[in-house]
Image 1 (cartoon, rainbow, N blue to C red):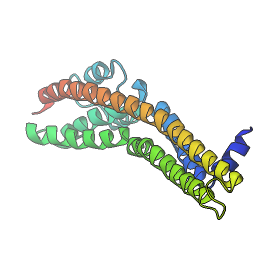
Image 2 (cartoon, helix red, strand yellow):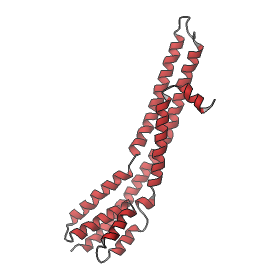
Image 3 (tube, one colour):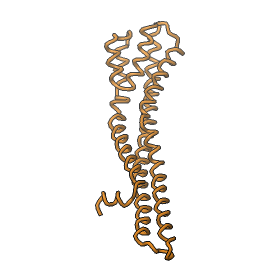
Image 4 (cartoon, rainbow, N blue to C red):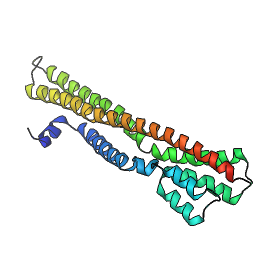
Length: 210
């Protein structure tokens, strides 16, 4: 039996599952592309930022390049911009400014993760819905005028709808759950690295305050 025949046999409830599978694949590819170390916390970026600002805050062009370098670069650049605009800025104000930028980039790192987690939970429910509809068809076939099993074709169709939807629901949910857990762990790891790097750079920026 071809895939199209399976989809046709599964009934209309299979189409929401197909949509969920397409979205899950798209979200997974997007996160693989954008949740890379070089785009989030490039190695040696903090050392390079400290080197270019050892004696003073660098020019605006360098800050712009730093912001475009990575998400960590945005956090580091936000601290340097605060020093450049107000050399006498308080320690708490400087830390708060960097934390605001940190929360912003943290939110971007978590992009699509909620949707991926929702798909992992929704897949089995949609499969269960299809299973219930298939079971209704089975009971309809068994409740004919001539007694149980009076409509074998409807009975077989109901069984196929139930089984195909259950299988498709699991096929969609299991990979989505695996990748959601994987990306969730990766984001948490990046957040820790970013927090440590930002704290190191914050201590350096304190030496530039007048």
